[in-house]
Amino acid sequence: MAEAVEMAGFTPTILKIVQPAAADAPAVEQYMVRIGLWSFGQRAKADKVVKELKEQGVRAKTDYLGDDGAETTGPWDMRVLMVDPRTFRGSYRTSVGKSVAKRETTGSMSKLNGAIAGVNGGFFNIHTAKALQGDPVGVSVVGGRLLSEAVPGRSGLVITEGRKARITELETVVTAVSTDGTKTAVNGINRAAGPEELVLYTEEFGSRTAADGGIEAVIDSQGMIVKLRQAGGIVARGTSILHGTGLMAVWLQEHAASTGMKVDTKVIDLRTRRAIPLTPTTYVMGGGVGLVRNGRVRVTAAADGHASINMMLRRHPRTMVGIDRSGGLILATVDGRNPGVSVGASMVEGARLMRWLGAKQAINFDGGGSSVMVVGHKAVNRPSDGAERTVGDGLFITP
Image 1 (cartoon, helix red, strand yellow):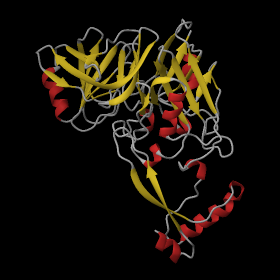
Image 2 (image 1 turned 45 degrees about the vertical axis):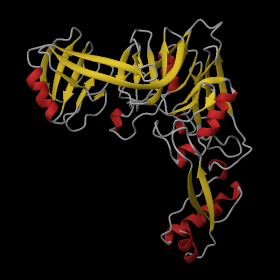
Image 3 (image 1 turned 120 degrees about the vertical axis):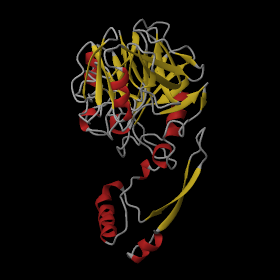
Image 4 (image 1 turned 180 degrees about the vertical axis):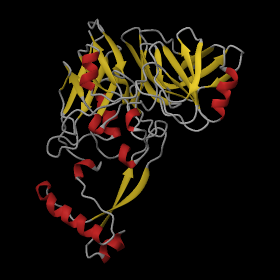
């Protein structure tokens, strides 16, 4: 790359960069080629160089040094909200808004839940059909109902009995059991089905199922199969749908005709190896990366799918949730992508911040343009997109 830059008529500098070690991934050395250095007010000059490089076939971009993960003195602009469990008499809950499939702003979900305050939740699936992008990437339980399956082993926030919160690693086990005694695994919940998959759609789905040539069993609230149909239709209130493709469509035809079907759902706490009781006061949200465990910085980047330069080293707007020694909740947002105002935080910086704030356990939620804290249903930070982004879910404090 440096040779290509020289051939284009520019002087390169080769810089070694180190992706920090995580609890489950080693440090990684990489190299970056840089050309020139301008003040932020001279960005147009940098952009002109990038254009000239691209015209000569050299991949390039303009980068802001505050984002690159090297040591900095900031500035930082953040919002922190703490809940004292000794005096607070409200509760915590997660929400997917009006439906699983559709995205909404955190402020809209806050209003829907009558919340005092809240933050955006975990990552959502931007790599699916636009109408389904509200689907959380990872586990979601709202009021005891499992609405999205876990990515096995990834970190999540568990809320029980209204305001008891903990962070742990989770997996889900979902099984379809027909009245003829046959069992099979359900591969997903409220998401697009892949080849040879069985997917459960609940009444919270909020979109039509795909007309992909599969077979669907419509199940009523008593577990009785109302009918078998070709795939592609609504999920009526009070019903659920088992949607099969390929061999799983054949399985439905063989075992779901004129019989009942029970869908057994379990959320397993991998630290205790026990199932979490799915009661009306149970809420679970999948996060991005575990940050703090037992009062120590412990970034589980590999297990949580984010062991990369972009996520571990570079600074972004960030949303984090922690639990202190007394069981109190700590919500924090760090604004970023706003030179001269706030540079954001790397994953390691976010973990150190949460530990400094007193978190015994902490987790990272979705960041970037999704990062927002709302109080009275309105953003109190400065989202990097300039306005609230629509997201998949949120975490809320209710009176």
